[in-house]
View (spheres, rainbow, N blue to C red):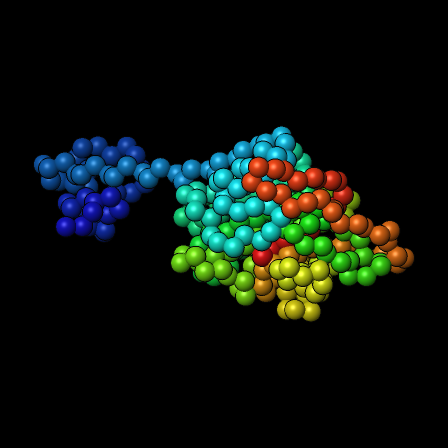
Length: 275
């Protein structure tokens, strides 16, 4: 028999459904059957919000990632995380690390260093993903790669966001478009920005739009808000473009972290690493 939770009681057809008034008298009741209508099924519990953890030291961040996400900071994850819910780890205002599951709560908008990041479309067939948002100068310690600037007139402006995606069978997904938003605030309202993609393990920047991606204003428009679409994932960085050469930005030379050690973090502007 059909479940009664989403349909009228057996004694009333759709044409006999009561009107919106809540004050019907017994004689006006749409059901004339002496048998009480079945009680509706209870509403399902809302999907729990992601667990959000904050850790003060880089050593504890590295250890947590190793234990609960199954990879080591200082390299691109090679296998899908064996987790059961969306998780978020914050390290002050300089770093965010998280996992996302399609069957769990959506990844929230993350604020790192007064900049907001939100993935609006993970891509077709994506079952789970990991992400890291960190400073451009810490690319070596975070993902094990040194990034070259696109040119002397480019300087880092947006955090590095690392996203690695897998399907339900644990196969890595790269060549599927993904979309995310970046909210940089009013200070970037008149700033010329360009976004570049770095292949996994590569220091060579590739212009995102030349690869078929796009950079659009957010809808509805917000000052300093951009909607970024990339045709594939790896490392994505946003840069200011100036008329004169920018001071040289030296990447971190901190050693690759291990499960029992942290890594040095620094300040500066950041990139999205999406792998």
